[in-house]
Structures are given as structure tokens and as C-alpha cells.
Length: 303
Image (cartoon, rainbow, N blue to C red; front, side, top):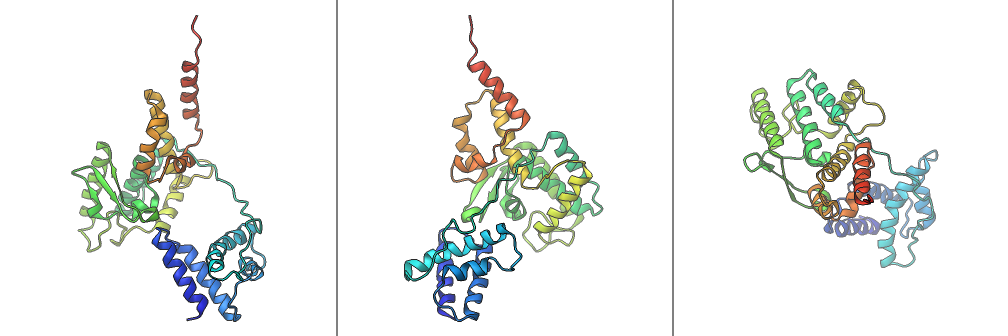
């Protein structure tokens, strides 16, 4: 093992100890170290990092910026150990990506998606897909969190989900509404009718009895979007945005003090602070209308 490879192992261990998974970054940095070892490089330079980041030669600027950003974090670590290491400045290949406008699903669109899921040929896949969509809509879970649920993590008696190894390797409990509990109980009964309990721990299972894979669920979801006639770029992750907007809209309609409730929404969604939750709050027509009504009532001048 080269010295640079050992330093990479130390770097990944240190970062992961703070809760960062670094799955993609770990793979990219391993490729970068291979690139350096093949050239006998011991001290990383800015020029070398830039050359590797922009491979292949016809890559997009966004691709190069993403790869260089990964290397930048590693070189900062190396620079602290050896000041001769070059650290690519942030101004070099700046990330020009922008926030994709999320699609806020309407109630009718959600109903259409779940109805379309029932038409899937495989009964077990149909049941799993419908239940997954319903859970994402009702709970705001990250897609990966829902797919990773084990049977022991779904307490239908207490109406509680235990989310383990979530972002930053944290664990949290997510209470469910009684209607969600009933829907999950119906799914579990249907699942076990179609396929006796498999040796695996997964709550949501595929037609083969294994855990539902993200790539397969994503493919089916995009097909359901098309079959439902939903226009625009509607993503699975937008269900999480829709959950946050729906919660905010409901609070406004109920006359709830929204500011005081945001920390609870952040905790429920697995965010460290409300700052992260703001990313999910978009101005849907329903939300803007109810917010405007609240402002009008608050500043109404009475004779």
C-alpha cells in the first residue's frame, strides 16, 4: 500500500467517524489515488488534481467541478500534514449547479399515482409500490430510509417507525397517523399472503422476496408518473418536498404559530435544524394563497 493510499484510508476513517458516509466520495478518491500511484506521485499538486477531475477530456463543467470538490476536501487534509500539498481553490471550476424546482404533488396526482400502482402486473410489486408511495407522502421520509426499513423497525401497535443509520448515521423515531398505520398493516397482511415471511429482515420486499432496490423503485415510479399524466419533471424526492409544504399549509389553515412548529418539523424529517428544512419549503399555489390570507388578516385596518 502506497503512503498516499494509507493517508486516504486515514482520511476516510476520520471523516466517517463524524457521521459522513462518503460512499461516492470514497470511490472517487480511491480512483484519484490510483491515478496518482500509476504516475508515481507522492505530493498532490493543483495541476494534477485538475487534470484528473476533468477526465474524460470532453466532460461537462459540472462533472469536473463535482470531482474536484471531492479532491479538495482530501487535499486540505493532506495540506495539514504536509504544506507542500496543493489545495485547488474554490474559484477553480466553481460549481454552477442550481436548485431544481421541486414538483409539489397535488392530492389528485398522489391519488393517480397510487391508483396506477395497483395496475402493476406483479401483485406483490403492486402492493409494495403503492404502500411505499403512501408512506413517503404521509411521513416525508427520505426514499432510502423507507426502503431500508426492517420489519422490527415498524411497530404497528405503537404506530412508530424507527429510522436507523439515517443521514449522518443518526437514529430517530417517526410517529405515524392512525390512517398510515392502518395502511401499513393492510400491506403487511397482503405481503405475507403473497409471500410467506422471507428470511430477510426487509419490510418492503420485491417479487423475489428481497429488499426493494432504489433503482427498481425509481424506474417503476417514473413509469407511474407518465401513466398518471403528471406533467413536468416530477421526482420521487419531490414527495418529501410535498410533505413539508403540505404540513406548512395545514398549519397556516389551522391558525397555528408556524415559526414555533418548524423545529418539530425539522426533527420529524431528520434535519439538524430548521435551516435545512427551509430547503424543502416551496411556494405552491395553495401555500401562497393561505399565507396571503394570513397576512391580510394580520394587517387588516379596521375603522
